[in-house]
Length: 67
Image (cartoon, rainbow, N blue to C red):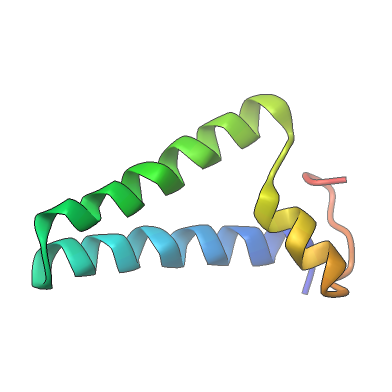
């Protein structure tokens, strides 16, 4: 699996986890969803993605978006 797909799966999972925690645990967990969304926006503009760096170091094959 490429870094790009791993980043998309991770980001989507963080968004859904944040929403579930906000619904079932405490509304302040929506901050996790906000953080993930802001990180996706800045990554789109800058090309810098901490998750992509981590997945590359873990040995995932490179993708097109985060090179």
